[in-house]
Length: 205
Image (cartoon, rainbow, N blue to C red; front, side, top):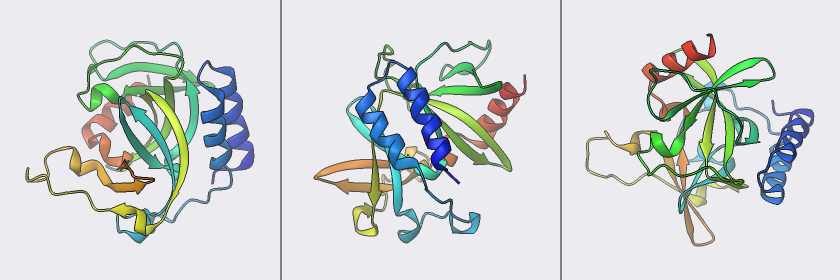
């Protein structure tokens, strides 16, 4: 459960970083008091995709992940590089004594690499894949806000006609908010089981 204490701690870490205060502060305040769903309820049906989402930017596009998956938000910080890892794995950080692997979501999605700025954030998320539960950081261009999405706001992912081999495999759907489209990510599927096991090994080194 995301408690008020945890949300307060997350807000304090954001305030200590160089990222914009107003946007992230509003997002963190909205994260408190969110109750997790039971595992058997975490499917991608329309009704079960409703709820609170944290939105963030990668270039001009806006993405969103379920707030239930978010554990912390912080500004960009020193990352220790790890040799012989994929280019999108930037390395690891020390989060209160725990080693957390960090993935640059731009590079993972094959977008052009961008210089990190004061708006760049690391979102620490909880990922579950192939029987492994892992906390990992994802680097995004900026955090936007927390949205509460209803079923009417969400549409299924379009059929791109590629046999399901593209990014569509890790999309929950598309949300329509104020005339704009937000891409809803299934963070558990953004990384493959093989990648999750590799990141888990990094976190244990």
